[in-house]
Length: 81
Image (cartoon, rainbow, N blue to C red; front, side, top):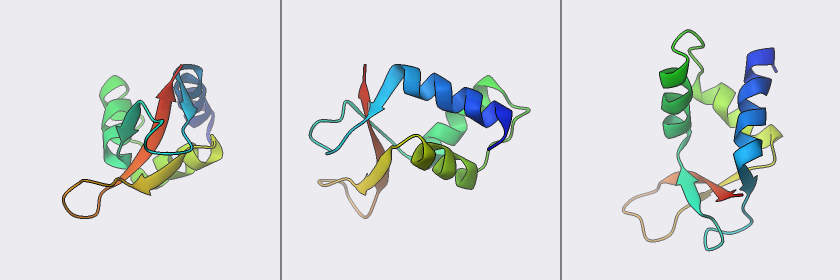
C-alpha cells in the first residue's frame, strides 16, 4: 500500500473502529462515498474504488448489504470512537 494510502488508513482508524453488525454501526458508507471524501480533501491523490476497498479491508472493516435499503447496496460499517 502506498504511503499516502497508509495516511488515510491511519486517519480513518483513529476515528472509527470496525463494526461487527449493521445494528452496532454508527456510520454506513459506500466505497464511492469514501473515495469522494478522500478525493475532495486531496484531489491530487485520485484514489480509486479498488484502492479504497483494499484500504478498508486491510484496516479490518467489512461491508455488508444493508437491510431495509431499496435494491442491493453495499456499505462499509463503522463505529465512531
